[in-house]
Length: 464
Length: 51
Image (tube, rainbow over all chains, first blue to last red; front, side, top):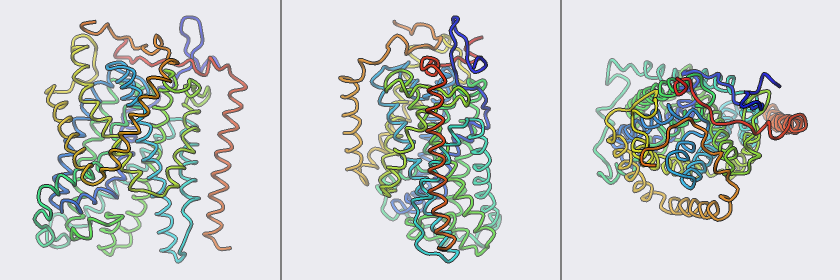
């Protein structure tokens, strides 16, 4: 037991293991997101046409580049699990921190449920292709969640090493498909000249497509959750996050280029698995199998990363008594937040059993979006309270405050886009977080150990 | 009963075993270790901030 504890002032303390490197951080961020390239992004084509989807891809790419830059700077100073929750706690205050923590848990748990639903659907499709119709997807949904939770329970190193391998295979599948469409000879396989049309619904369609452009990148900010388990977090987190963002920009652009050159926008806009459909259109069975495996691996990697992130956020809320302190325990052998991991299993299964994939994803996106909006405010306050010369940073993002302002403006545009398509969901989730805030303020905050919340070795903020 | 039905039952059984293992391990850890020790972690500091 003594080897698993860090001694502080004579008493034994347990801590998470610092075993991760920038490749694990990359695997966590890209692993959560890459499934969005295999499905989901193409709903932006239905709203804005092929060109509208490309605009959404790059505009939302700009939004997430701002997120990655801001996250990288702040996390390079906060080497703690909880990511944006911990940032909010230190920089803004407890109510914002509680909300951000809840956004994170909801966003990742719902995304995990959606990923498990996708694995179930893929199993059903695979069974149908092999001659068995009507396979019940529920056992495979539960198995996906249970197996990945077990893996997360047993240790972060193996969990994210697996994520690295399967994410790499999924990314390689996109690259191989790109080579397969003969990109050096446009017009032979890809028919962009014939298939690309004007904006079918004008610029309002482009604005509406922004919401689905989020699928290309949703979850890259999850790299911050690994901060407490990463060696040299101040250097590794920015490296893994920015590397992940570059990977996603390449993957998103290639995905758009391949799919819009093979399918008319009317079909592409409602396809379930566009990249797999693209491989099917080429008539190459090896590519078809590769893209099926790539889609499956991307969904599993995403669910795996989501369990990792949701459990770290829930654990951090428990550690600070924002939620019952019982969840703030670390396993003495595996050094994982094991109680948080187990607690979130039935919640993910419950979301998955609703079967409402689009609603679950919309709630996940909205929770993420609320988190990004906070980050722009957070960054401005961070630089004001702790100027560059007051805390050592592993990464300093350039052009401050432009990225924070751009992020805020783009988040506002996506809220408007979401309101156009999912106004009721937007209002429902706002009502949920307002009710949760009231509960926290009047019922829960009395249990928070206020003096124990701030353990980072930061100087007193400027002006205090 | 064909292969796919057996596969579905196997998925249920494996899921139940995995969850049961985690629950059993969680209970066993709670019995072996003091609660204060299990919940004693603090936010970490990085090498860079320690310099």
